[in-house]
Length: 82
Image (cartoon, rainbow, N blue to C red; front, top):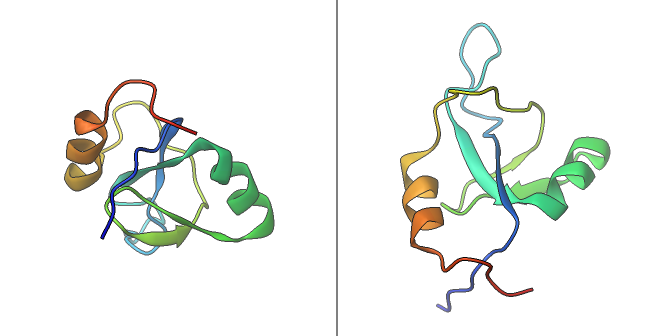
């Protein structure tokens, strides 16, 4: 299994972990260039932690972030590679 760095990472919701009020329980880090495509086309994105889901909501400041995604994101070198 190889590891690659993912530049332009942003947070987006994990669509299957929703609460009764339709708000995601936590948000995940995904590649920025995949967010718009997923939101418009309904394609799935892969978070740093490996979760796969369609983008359906945007995070608000203070939203909970997946601890695995956060740990992986913080271990990435600045800038990354394209």
